[in-house]
Length: 510
Image (cartoon, rainbow, N blue to C red; front, side, top):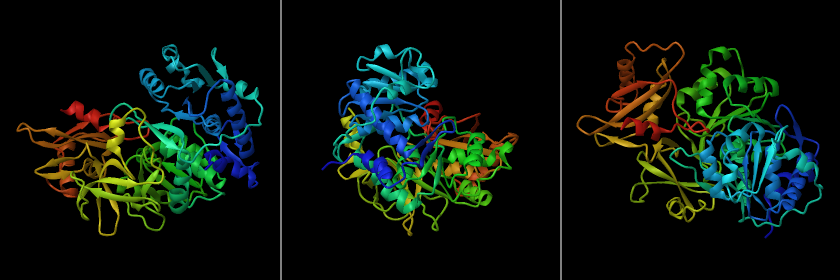
């Protein structure tokens, strides 16, 4: 069976008459579906000229501009495997990942070139560096290379089960792992979550705070809009409240894809109190971390639209549990997305009953094939049709799932499981607290108790705060769950996708 993801995502739109419609707008340049088709064909010819063969990898350290979909889709069209990388890594992290995936070509945005310039010579598999930007600084310039090529190219006759692209995990618990995704995985996310939960339409304009290198952002800003011929606004800058509100005012998106930390920051930015969501905004989504109930309710009260909170992963490519329009219960991750099966199991693999905490396993049409060069971790995560998420959840009698924490974040106090997320959610309902993270700490007797790290809202006072917060948590969720120790900090360690890196706090707390 022949199937290339680009035929379905891109060529179909041109065949159906959307060649002149804007596919991507990065605030500097725009790209229609027809222009994108032409550019990806030229990219395919460029890779062929550079000697890159089918199934070999090309790495992408690229900001969210119109060049990103050109490279990503152009490589897939050629049967070459693009590997988008987190744009916030260090030089040594890039050296590790580039060596791990054995990239033949590196596509890099001009602004990010200084981070990798000193490691390029240490990578024996890397043969070409191509720069997206005005000045290639001695390397090849992407615009020049593409302009040299013909726009006639025979799309690679790939198979639906053939690797199409890799994504590296966000590294919330250590060095990132390369997840091999297949040509069929992209359509699987669009035909399930995007179509049946989000209800994406051709007339939608989407804006995603999550970047394209992230599985969540890739679906939001590329797969989903292209599945119906919609338009995406790309943002190459850091997604601060000021930046996102400016884009919302200018482009009036109908769908805004955010993350919990950004929603909270937008709600609490004093300089942005007068800003709205725009007259066309019809829905918002959240993933990356569980959305606190207080944030969801506050967003709806201010902007008049709901946030569809859900959970996804790099391994499963996008959201597999979600709230849906008309059936939202803030504080939960909702129910399984149509097309996905889930179950909760205890430490021995036995399914747990409603109300009991268990690890979440998912049977997903979008599941990755394996981790590259990590057989042990692959076998521990991908168990036949089921993928272990590493998340602890509890299911209620209505079939809704509530996040409790990562498996390695959960701990017991007085023999009872404590969810760091539950304590954190209680803490941020206090008017002085903006963000919170909770980890276990041993008391003088060696017993584990909750320790909290909190970031205060602007003007927040510390006088009497510790005891007030302890009492606040006791009243909210129970007397045994309150944090015995509370540290006020300026910020919390996070991944580029907004996930709190509790392991860094745990290491410092022990």
